[in-house]
Image (tube, rainbow, N blue to C red; front, side, top):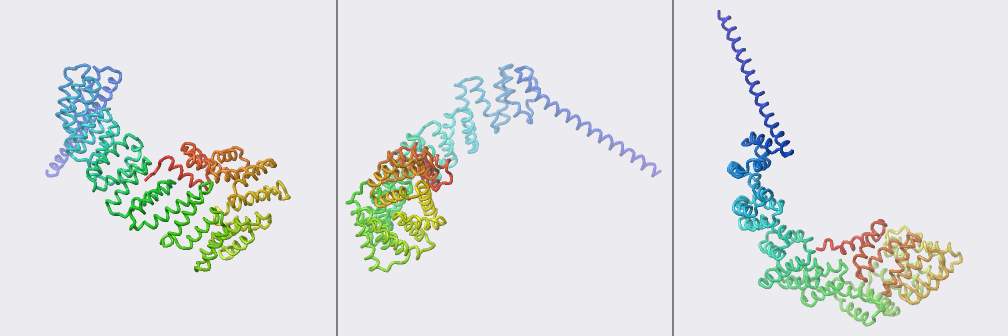
Amino acid sequence: MLTIELKVESRKLKVRSWFLGFLILLIGTHLNVFAQTKAEKKELADEYFKRENFQKALENYEDLAGDENWDAQIFAKYILCLDKIKPGKTESVIKKYLKKYPNEQVYQTFQFSYLKNTKKDEKELEKFTIGKLIPWFLKTGDRTKAGYTFFLENNSSSYAGQLLEMGIKNYGLQLLWKEMFQIQLLEKKYADLAVTIVRLLDERVMDETELEIFLQEPIAQDELAKKIQIELLRQIQSRPNEPVFPSFLAWIYTQKKDFEGALIQYKALDMLQASGGTLTFQLGEFAINNDLNRVAIKCFETVIQYFPASQFRFLAQQKLVQLREEVVKNTYPVKKEEVKELIEEYNNLAMSQYLNAFDLTMKVAELHGKYLNRPDTAILILEESFKRMRWPSSFQNKAKVLLGDMYILKDEPWEASLLYGQVEKDEAESLVGYEAKLKNAKVFYFKGEFELCQEQLDVLKQSTSRDISNDAIELGLLLQDLLAEDTTGFFLSKFADIDLLIFQGNYAASIEQIEKLTITISNPIVLEKLKYRLFKNFEATRQFDKALEELDQIYKTKASHLYLDDALFFSGIIQSEQKKNKEKAMEFFLSLIKEIPGSVYVAEARKRLRILRGDSVN
C-alpha cells in the first residue's frame, strides 16, 4: 500500500512540474510576443512618420506612450504628430512628460526646440527659456555646462551667455571659464573677454602659461589684443604692486611683436620684484634667438643702466658689445670710428668673468686687422700677448690661425702657411686643426700650387666638421671643373686672385675681375661659380638687389646642384632681413625644405620659417 501511494504522489508531482513548466513557457512566449509587438509598433510608427502619414504614426506612438522603455525614443516624433493631428492636446502632453521626467534633459529641452523651430513663437520661447529652462539648467554645475552646449548647438548664443553669467555667480569662474572664454570670443565681445582674462589672472584660476596657450591663436586679432592691453594697463595703474598684470601684458606685447612695449613691462616688473633685471635680460636673449638684434641691444642697455648691481650686468655688457660687433661687421663701407669705439668697449670688458683675456685679445686683434685694415697692428697685439701671457695651447692655436689670416691680409702667404702648419701638427684631430689645414690648402690655391692644394683637400673631405668638409669639396670641385676647362690653369689662377681679393675685403677689385672673366668663359658650371662669387661680393657691399639677381640666375639656370640650396637659403635671408618681404622669404625657405631636404641649411630654414609665421613665440 505504501509503495502504491508513493507512486501516486510521484506521478502527481510530475504532472504539477510539467504544468508549471508549460505555464512558464506560455507566459515567456506571450511576453516575448508582446515585446516584439512594441518594437514593431515603433518601427511601423517611424515608417508612417517618414511617409508623413501622421494620423497612423500617432496611433502607434500613442500605444507606446507612457512606457518608460519607449518614451525617450518616441517623444519628439510623438509630439510633432500630436501637434499636427490633435494640436489642442500638445501642451498638456508636454507638461505631463515634464512632470513625469523632471531630471531628463531630452524632455526639458524639447519645448525650447518646439517653440523655436515649429511654432516660431519668440515671446513664448523667451518666457519658457528664462522662466523655466535656464533655471532648470542652473540646478547643478554639470547641467549648466550641458545647457551651454545645448544653446550653442541650437544657435542661441545669447541664451548661452546669460546661462554662463548666472552659472558663474552660482559656481564660480573656476568651473565655467572655458565656456565663458569661448562664448565671448564667438560673439566678439572683446572688451568683456578682456575683463574675463583679468579675472582669471586675478583669481588665480589658472597659471599664466595655461592662459597663454588658450590665447595663442585668438591674440592674433588686433582688436582683441588692444582690449586686453587696455584692461591690463588699467589694472596696473590701480594696482601697481600686483606682478601678474605687467607680466601678462609683456607676453601680449611679445606676441604682437611690440618688443618696446614688452621691454617697458619687464623692466617695471624687474623693479617691482627686485629681480635684478632677470626678465629684461631674458627678453634680450629671446630677441637674439629670433634675430631681433635692435631689440636685444635695448634690453641689454636697460640691464646695464637700471640694474648695475645685477648678476647679469657683465654678461649683458658682453652681449651688447657682441651685438655691436655684428653691426660693425655687417656695415659697408666700414665705419672706422664705430670700430674704434667697439675696440674700446672690448678693452673695458677686460675684467669681465664671462669673456677671458685670450678671447678678448683675439677680438681686438681681428678688429684692427680686418676692419681698420691694420694687419701689422693685429700681428703686434697677438705676438706681444704671447710674450706677456701664458696662453693655453687650445687658445694659442686659435690665435695662430688668426695670426695666419693677418699675414694673408699683408700678402705674405708663406708666413701664414707656416703658422697654419704648426696648428695642423698640434691639433691634428680637432676642429681647429681641420680649419688650419683648410686655410693652408687655400694658401696653396692662392699661390697657384694646385696639386698641393688638392692633396690637403683630399684629407679634409673626411673631416668630421660638415662645414669644413663641404668647403673642401667645393674648392676641390672648383679645381676639377676649371682644370677640365683649361689644363693650363689660367682660369683657375684668375679664380684664386678673385677669392684672395674677397678674403682681403677688396670687393670692388674682386667684382671688376669677375666681370672681366665672365666675358671669356662659356662653360655654364664655371659661370655659375663666378655668379656665386658676385653674389658674395654684392652681399658684403650691401647691394642686395644685385645679390638677389645673381642668386635667381643660379637657381633658374641649375648648371649644377652645388649652389641650389645656397641660392634658396640666402634669397630667403635677404628677403626677410633686408627687403622685409616676409611672404617672399617664406616661399624661399619652403622651397628649400621641400626641394633639397638634405641641405645643411634646412634646420635653420625651418627655424626662420617658424619665426616668420609667428609660431611658438613664448
